[in-house]
Image 1: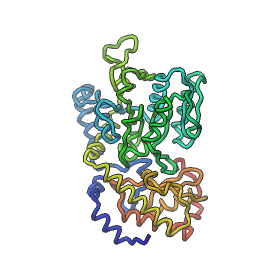
Image 2 (image 1 turned 90 degrees about the horizontal axis):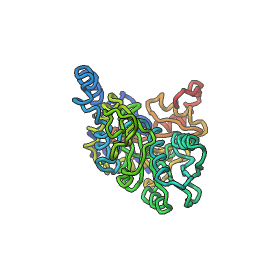
Image 3 (image 1 turned 120 degrees about the vertical axis):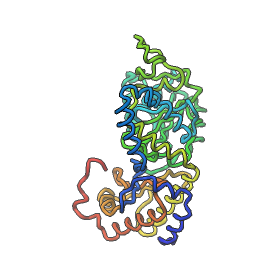
Image 4 (image 1 turned 90 degrees about the vertical axis):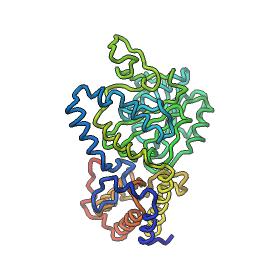
Length: 402
């Protein structure tokens, strides 16, 4: 494929999403291809957080729980986020962290399938998913077994936990097909949509549970709260083993024993992090104006362009699926010295990240990445490799966060 920069600028001019780039704060001279790890800062977020601090907290004080809507944030924010993952009102709760929501969803699923003693994961899932499964099994006294999804689904499987898009390679599962297969085996399906929400159309409505974060493509900010979807058919019977006071039917009755709330609120746990919610609310103000079909179409175009350009100028091996239908919004290549290569690239204004042992990872957030950005990023990567700029000794030193 032969593409020049002028052609890419022409594509940017025709882009229906081009106006959204101005709604982000992006450092001059930086091409930010790490939206799959931490999304860029929406321009309106500082003002929204400042208002929560100075006006809501500063003036309303404790009254802000009522007057500013803090108390209801896990539910009201869940309803706002729901359309982005194919869910409806009263089906999503926001709060806690991704790790906590994994624990909640899987433990609830196990209780809905008594007698089955197998949890199925994927060895290539993001590590926290598998770590939480290990911890849950230990907490349950070791009576459960963890298997990999590559093994057959027997009638002893209670729940399957998979990531729609693999964090290392960007490989994407066929969600409808896998969900149907799992449920046909009598098990419950839990989807992790951390690496797909905000980058493509997501539909969790067929799943039993789904979890995800809001700090990647959704731009909620570092430490932004996670979300949990519970299918309406399970809400009356599913149990939240983390029975914190917020999930009580009448939290301010201060009863001695726990009595779960009805509906999705029973999957809250404790006091919401109000300032983090404020940042997420600012991002959702923007997302409510976004056409996700346009986002996905641009994602496919950007990632395909990057693959073509990089492969035309380097001998890097593609680690992501070539078929865009099987790929999320990231592209990964392998290189035996991937870490210093990425450090050299970042030094030249193209920000990606590295995943051990040899993955160069590039995430494409269609709201603020354009076609000319992709062209420039590819040319810079080609230069770093062609001139062996990564061999500078300073790039070999590992930072705490890679």
